[in-house]
Image 1 (tube, one colour):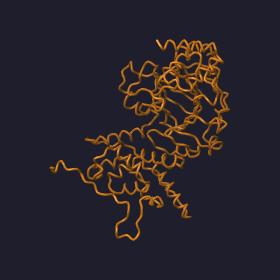
Image 2 (tube, one colour):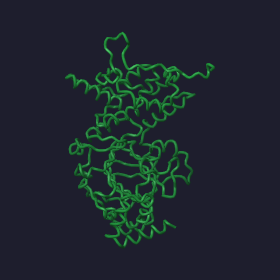
Image 3 (cartoon, rainbow, N blue to C red):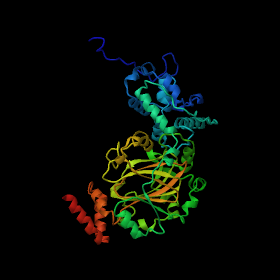
Image 4 (cartoon, rainbow, N blue to C red):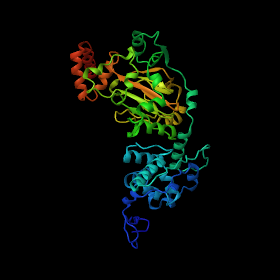
Length: 465
């Protein structure tokens, strides 16, 4: 076998200390070690570019992709081990500084319910050291220095592909969302509830499948006065809420994260159980225009999730998706401003894959706005609007929609619903799976709403053709 054909022989990784050591120690025992705080400070992106050398810096690991290296660290290394690895070379430090790695590590190990301090790395190491000190009966003083500010993007030629991805990721974290407030076109009608009757809404918007913003409908909601940062913290600070990415955090910890994070896509509080854990459901009301809710015929315990409380900072939001089971939706903003981009059901947004009930097959909002939106042709542009405090947006059944939060604190409540007007679209969507809910809904609709059951069967027959 020639030298070029010989396989690479990798050194054996030992899980023990050198042979001359009197005490052998497993790597897992490092979990009991406090991590020196001098290693906490994040390296800014420009300095990592200068030192980036994949082959020399990573050694035998250079043959693996960035994704494979991240998975290796996430699956096999402890928190202290990652910090030790970061000291091996500047290139390893570059890999170990990736906030996405630390975010996944926090979620997998500790479900995310830790006090956030500037970065996920700093938060997790502080939490780890606090636990080590607590077990030893010692006092822990957390590091408080914030991460370095980055004011200018690094400019250089011949950028490595992985570094270019990292640069774009960094750029998306520092862009000012205010630009997207100033440049948002207004394509959606605004109608006051004082003149938009329920029948007008059905005839002009719900039945034709057209979005509309309803104003003056939330003035008497207690939530408009009670849902402030201070009051929510006072009332529900110790209540745990679910966020995107599988985290479950107390509201106190989430608000601390909200005010100190600097992420491309910040965690978005998106909780469906708030009706059981808080009094928030009693602090707003569903207006008459959305009062019809056909899924309630199966009972509260049998119906799929349909209402959520939404809290997020600037840059948070949701990528393009369609709502499940053919439902329409309404979204009411109590605090802050949202920018929406929408497409009718027959138009597939560019760079967005087929919708899937298990995940959103689309880039995050800021990535889509930076890398897709500027290159759209005139006939590819979405329907857009600014959704302001005190307004309710109606999203028709089947419409693709993406939302990007623009203010430091945005609070909203949303609900999906099936109605007489969108029942044919709901039935068509339910026929795709024919799950247990399909059978329950069909049975109860036949018993409780025989007039609408005829529409159900008619739509079913049409789909067979």
